[in-house]
Image 1 (spheres, rainbow, N blue to C red):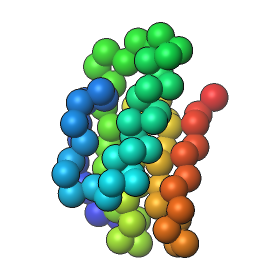
Image 2 (cartoon, rainbow, N blue to C red):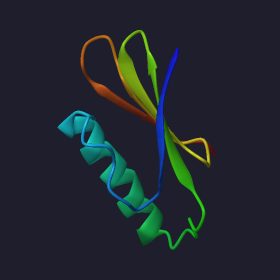
Image 3 (cartoon, rainbow, N blue to C red):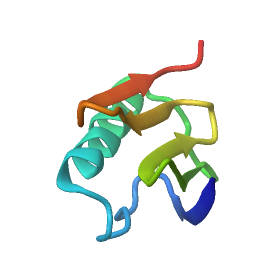
Amino acid sequence: MQLGTRWPAHSEPPQSLDVVVREAVSEVERELTALKQDTTGWYWTLTYLENRPVVQLDDGTTIRVLHNGQISIEIEE
């Protein structure tokens, strides 16, 4: 696994991320806003597994690009 970067929730994701991953991050953030979830101080962490991005929010929500190119969003409950 290769470490990528971290950035604050509700701020601009790295431009190096594919558009579909950036859109998935935005989708998760919109859902958190709608739930009135306090994300003050939360960060996203970008790593790479098998050369594909894995983006994880501090609450455990994880966005992955699967082998077939599809996006998977796993929400920790």
